[in-house]
Image (cartoon, rainbow, N blue to C red; front, top):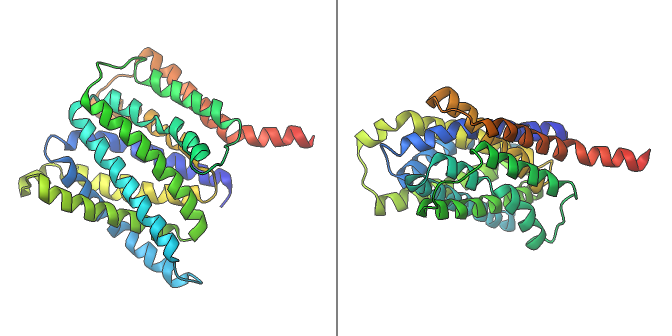
Length: 295
């Protein structure tokens, strides 16, 4: 797969997540966040299982113990990010949640430098800044009063950045993207259902009330989009992937307008342009720099 095709996979994942943000917020009217997470990742596991089975049959060697531990760590990071985001949505606005979650665009290159000792391409920093400013403008250029949900969502952004880094490390290292996808989905499903059974009530009415949201989040936002992320990140860097995945804020605003009747503020159109500019810089900037050096 070429780097361009990989980044297109990440853009498509961002689009699916953008629409899924609507489902995640409306589901909270019927079902608790832990049950929602557990059930959506059960469906995601069913999506990934046949792909992982086919991949295992074609693999030259089994997954190593170190890679399985990496898969487990990736799943735990994803579960923590999903939980903190859903809990945050209970007490913060969709605008605040979308903006604060997207801080992983900034956290990812910082963690890559501090934890992995990998300095991203110099153009990733201005590209991340453009995406960050664009997301802020898309939110209306302001945040409402800081709430407990905002603190939860900040934690979500940190763990989301960790998940992006771990996927980038172990998808390429193991060469088993479907096994990684299935493993992280199973971790989220098991942890979510155990925590939900311990802390949240459940009923058939709650499940049916959020049925469409669970189906979309499970099959598309979790199953399809996260598989696209894992596949795409095998052929690009984690900081660059974070910029492409940040397009979810742009798509969330679009689907919010189409499905919920929300309006994009005037500054939001400038924000869309800034996000798009950041994506172009991340995609074309390094290539243009190499062309200058070889010309």
